[in-house]
Length: 239
Image (cartoon, rainbow, N blue to C red; front, side, top):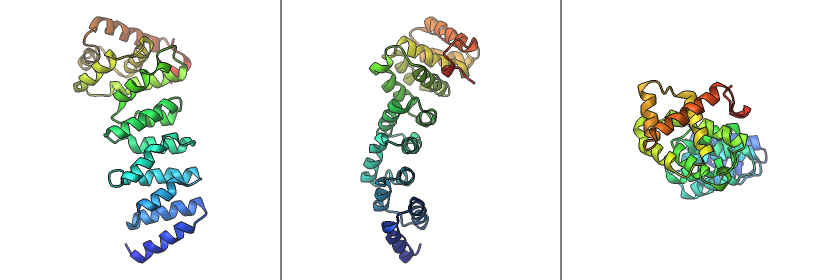
């Protein structure tokens, strides 16, 4: 961690024109302990999407230390390049704070049809509020497109991976303003990964729909049958 080396690298970075040179210098500064908020800000303001992408990855390391960088990162959900939004979703997916959850919801609302970005936003602990925020909007209350249904099926699989002890979240979700189509498609995704014949499966279903047990079981069975018979739209079916 030579201070002189850090100083030289920062001067080089200020004058660098090559995206590769900027990225390599920034990561070298990181390894030498010389990464500062000014360096991250330079990367995030770059015209090159790959430079911004690496700026997101490095800036996420300063999320709790630098409020300005946190604010700038949150603004990048509107970045025109999907590779930057994908990196942002990955960076925020494992964070538990509400601001991260809000940004992920904004990314999902825009990029639910993008396979990789949607997988990134669904990878974290914010699945329930994410679904609540998206599926309650007007665009998700009418007839759903194949892309919307595909997203909800994958979200349902993530719900099935939750612990049964999180029943309060599940009950709130299924009692919320979901359309009947959205609720059924979510259950289809759950049915794809959950065995309702075993004890844990039944407990999970009871937790998800405590006030409509019999109705919920019928809906769950229909959803499972749709996938089994491959009657759902092609993009929804499991390969």
